[in-house]
Length: 232
Image (tube, rainbow, N blue to C red; front, side, top):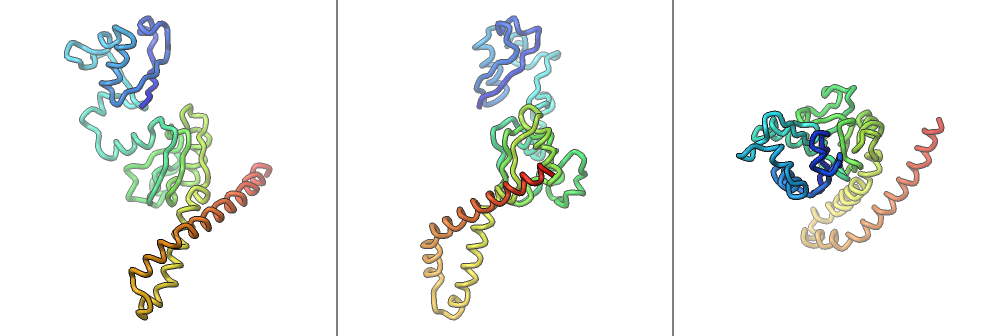
């Protein structure tokens, strides 16, 4: 994974004056080794003879001091770190609301199960948020991320959940309706379960085509409405 490292002024003599260095690393240890291979002397300034960070060194990952993360991260902290990581795409799937606005309390969200995991829209560093889920982001959280989130805190890209989740919901609706239609013949013994499943599989491409058409239409209807809201 490509990692951008901000070099403090006192160490820039070792990086040829560069204030930022980018390299691939899977963890903090690999990052320091990679920095030292490219710019000899950095590891000696950062670590002691045992390879531990020197007491006066502060190393941050996504604004978190690694000293407090080492061997102490709870599952909730790990998930929050994933939600706020610098990535191209943060994609939600399943159920749960994980992003709110800083002006909202967790009780305002109505999803107590994920209160310990939830973060604010302005803290999301992903360039794009996609929602293959239901209500992954509150409406105020969506606005806050679009205005003050993203990799440079200047706003990220996000649709309404109706756009991103259109395909999943539409496919599910078709599936449920077809199963309801077949439930009568199944109960009466006119078809067997294996035959029903075979017919469902046979209709896969037809359902996908209907879903794609519905999603395209929904996005076309959404765009004029968004333009009218901006003009208003």
